[in-house]
Image (cartoon, rainbow, N blue to C red; front, side, top):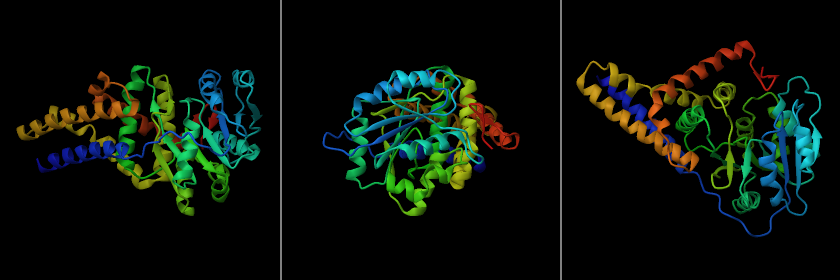
Length: 352
């Protein structure tokens, strides 16, 4: 019985840790004053359907001296045509050299062509609210940061998105805690800091290149922050279960490799998430079953609260399906571990 109660206590601890981590992030205020010029770099591989939303949100924010660069990473759809329609600076990433992954290579190529002293790397599946670029540049200057990344608001469409994306983020924050990191969907970095750490060339073979860049900044003692940007940045990462499986599977073991302790804690949190449901059904002691039922209710309430935090919308009934989310996510993680030996791919490119 004592072991069961300790497992329930651990599960509750991780739930609180996740909520406290996301609530502790500093919020990004608006900025109306002067700001330095910025080079916005968008790596794009088969992003024809997503680019219009991003570019439409970016172009009104471009000021004198700014530049907007789309780096085409050997797209097979109409990404190039879409970029040309918006009149942005379009460059080709070129052939992928040995030892490089596609996204770091595209970001590196864009950075080499950029003219300004601030670089902003933005993923094609995001959209920025008006004033977001000025707000991030203003905050970085005020806080004397060399780099700044935003936690994005999640736009969730399908059932599987609403079920699995909040679950994954919740247990990521449970493992990672309030420690700063970089979110590859939106990274603002000064050129001196970028060059000091070696830029994307230094993380050329990393699947989680954003986390690897954060580790490099820490190694060099360069200040950076992850900031609550849900007011300013929205993202829809996946639109189907196969896309979720591929995306989360790609990142889960890579995160473990970059931050082993956080990765182990995330794995522990994810596994413990199933404990109250299991004990509520199979516990042999009445006290254990009662405690498990209480923990189950608390976990559902915690999941709903976290979902509201992540989406800034009313939580949906998918938070009631935490056991299903846990089983599916553990299966994705297991598949990802197996994939390290099976040489997985992402958008047609080898990840190992």
